[in-house]
Image 1 (cartoon, rainbow, N blue to C red):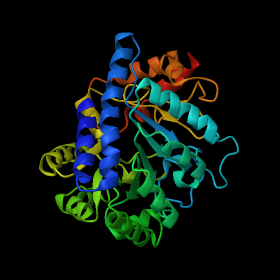
Image 2 (image 1 turned 60 degrees about the vertical axis):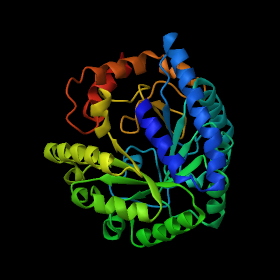
Image 3 (image 1 turned 120 degrees about the vertical axis):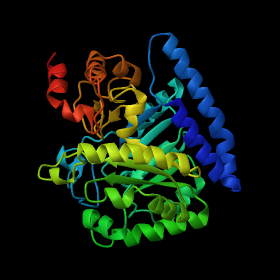
Image 4 (image 1 turned 180 degrees about the vertical axis):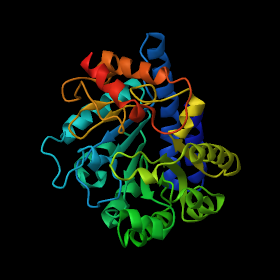
Length: 353
């Protein structure tokens, strides 16, 4: 994971080489990565493993209804949102502790995270942490363009499904055109952005190609997340990658990483094969739901502790997370797909215990 962090850092540094606002950000952020790494190593010596990443779903609302959305499938995202969402002050408490213990990246998700402008403004204050913001991109207006231009530690990660037709099929008519305009404006301002592609059986051969990556790089994209589809919504099993598909995806992304030196390519959970297994439950990250529930992973939405009443350290030291890490550790062979999603019953049993 340290190697992956260095790769992301190198990509950001190269992207902002001739950008004054970007250089100012990099001059402060790169030293903060070294500081965070030292803090994590010190904790490790004292018997506590601090993950370099957190995933924070800050909103339970979304303006789109994408096919196969896991957040809607497990009830985290609802039509009118939830009335038990954490306040911006409660999120600030989490961000503060994360900064103090050496967390380098906090992925903001939802729902649609841009709906929570109060939390976005709070996150922007923490310049030692990079906040990739996983967004559908349709709410990035002129005000948000100014926000991302001013706060370079807030990195928009725009969700796409490959080409325009595939994006509109899953996300709704006109979405591809909307985000194309947004990417053009981000490029014009010299703002680093990333793209997240949910890889399914339908877009695998079109989205995971050198040609597609070249197209994204031309549009100004510097980082690409490939996320294997997890069938949280019943009836969408046809979209799941076969074992053969997963093997091809892992091999192809490794090949693309070697030739696309001007981009960072991350594959989830495929990269876990090269990191000795599942990274959930605090090994590499854990997930915080909009109501504060501390969950092993977005695809394993089970919780014993809530961040409204406990700390990150307490969650990491919990018996529940330790049990979940044992489940993934005992998975001797990584055959693709989400380990904890495939062991849902075992995770439930660990809660009972």
